[in-house]
Length: 142
Image 1 (cartoon, rainbow, N blue to C red):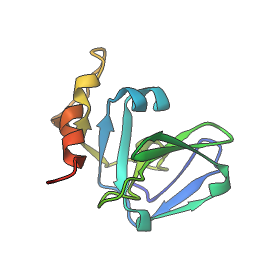
Image 2 (image 1 turned 120 degrees about the vertical axis):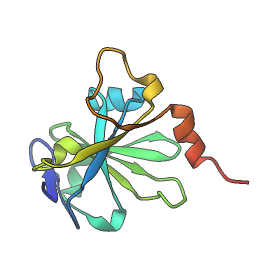
Image 3 (image 1 turned 90 degrees about the horizontal axis):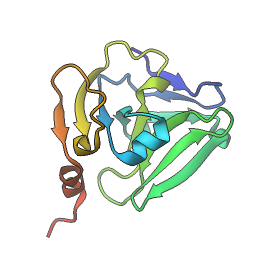
Image 4 (image 1 turned 180 degrees about the vertical axis):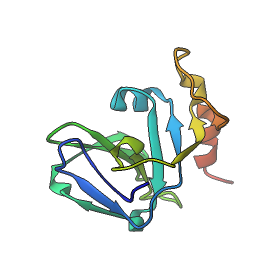
């Protein structure tokens, strides 16, 4: 397992304060279109990520509460970042495939399971949430 990663061409590199232990998968239609399949990612707080080559990032505001980053040179999908105010603001969801070594990172959760195409499934037990359940977690509390 590693605490460094990059895009395919190396124009964007990052270092994490600590190597991730687990990851999750998003099956929503936006993640599938953006990454070319289910988006397998690990979370990192903003203060735990140092990025080199930020001038090579292509940022795309994909919703009212998040943005996605890819390499402007090679097109690699790198991360999804929460921009909405709240405890998750600034949190990175970094593509697991961008890690230099992802050995030992365990998949624990799948979200937007109701949007997953029926042509694939992951082995093992994971916690599963529908899109409605995910959105309910971010709904303002009265």
